[in-house]
Image 1 (spheres, one colour):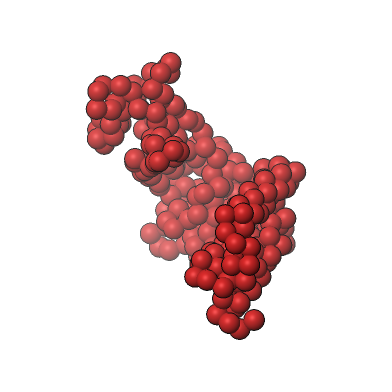
Image 2: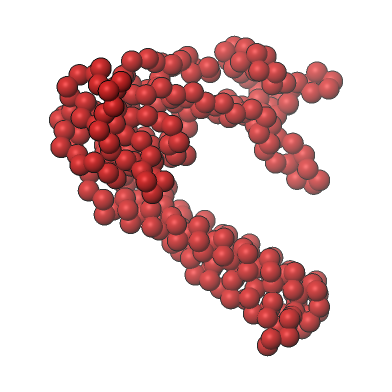
Amino acid sequence: MPIKLRFLQSCIATYYIFGFFIIRLNDHDHSTVLSGDKDDGLAFGFTLLVMGLLIFFKTLKNLKMKRLFENLPTSKMRSLAMGLVELKGKIQVEDKMLEDPFDGKECVYWRIHIQESVKRGKRRKWVTRHKAKSQVPFLASDQTGSVLVHLDNANMNDVKRDNRYDLATFFSDEIPTKVQDYCRKHNVKLKGWFGGKKRMRFIVTYLEPDDDIYILGNARPLLKNEQKNSKNVTAAIDMSSKGLFIISDKSEKELIDEYGGQSYILPLGIILSAIGFSMILTSLGYI
């Protein structure tokens, strides 16, 4: 996502968070909320502290990943060193292929997510009704050679969504037959108590042969049972000792923009934590 859009999102988040803080001030005695003279001040201070710390550490983690993307050089498949590596190439079939349940695409990985819009109080929210995935090992190749990739424990959150189907209560097209058949097989109900259609969305993601692929993971020598491939396969890739294993069909630039675009809200986390901590100390009589 472009940095300018990330900045806009950060501004909107800051507006709503501080708007919530101002509403709290208007709903309570100012001295009570700010000074923490009562239990309400202590609870609100603790909420701000936790919120600020979560924002701070999440943003800090993303910035560390951004720097890693920027600083780790891209290795060639034929000459990569063992250990943490960054690789770019194309997906090739290693042995087996899968077929995704919704679109019938041949792939090495698929993930589906079925959600229903449910009313909770005065608002509606998307609730997960079904999730599933399947994967097989594959080869990632560049012009110099190939590596064998095992997807176990890989972070696949940065794989782009390929398709989405929507089902609405009124005026919506019928979802594809394959999606309907899958829902029947896995007991996902598409209709409500009185036979009306539910408001639902069906999201499918997959990695196909010849897709561009970005890999950040651990390179290790091939095991004996992995040496059945051609001589061009130089290593196997799995999770690193640091717990890093990212697979994405986004470009390196997209990942850098995505992880680095949240840097603008780092000061927000510090400010919220400081306000919350001050309120807690005041409420407990230390200030």
